[in-house]
Image 1: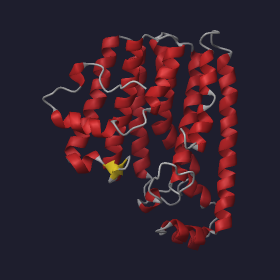
Image 2: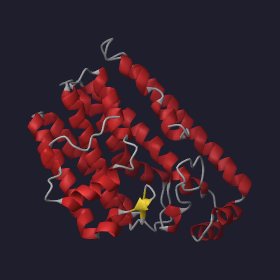
Image 3: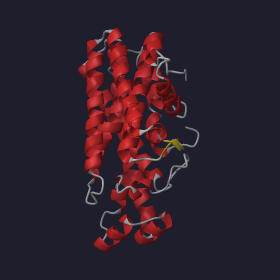
Length: 313
């Protein structure tokens, strides 16, 4: 993947050294998956390199701005095994840096001049903020439903994936509603699979990234797998589950066999979601030109990769 931090020299002026350092810290440890997805789609649509770079940088700016704000709201101490920006540079700098990145997105996209793309991007940022607002309201809500979490995941995680798939089509002025409806559905599914898989990491399931265990639960937040595990639990089990301080303690409360059965059921539900994703890819293929349809072959593996978290991914 090409380095996408800079599109215009004005993005990180030398007279804002803390902004440069802060973004370097955040960006340099990311996988750049979303910008790679933009490139994958953009190249299949024969976008110019300069436009692919613009779109790649746009999604990185938006994603990293959301991380800056999320970490502050959640009072997270670590991001990608590094001290979070609000702790290292102060909360004020983290907020300002996130706001600055979002502002630069609009400045740079406005130079491209595609009003539909600008509006689409503004709507996506609005969805991100709405999702964060709803998610924050669900902290310490121990009666939360999976449908509520799915709504948050669609607004936060799904909106980024939808943008990665749709933005290159906007950039080449393909506005066909049927195509975009399918791209939205595909992005929503990818976002849901990614987030549900991420929630499993909290329980050390396929945790190749060595994410901290029970971080969500200790923060007072029931993630999707927590909610799934608690289906049918007694009030006493639920109360003890919420107070769990280790995975071993939690498995004693839920019962090890029950934990594994729930995990298997959770995986089966998401395997069916992967099948639905592949079905929708086939429908998308029928709407694209022969050259454009080559994209579908590259999109098919993404759902399995994001959910099953292969160690090599």
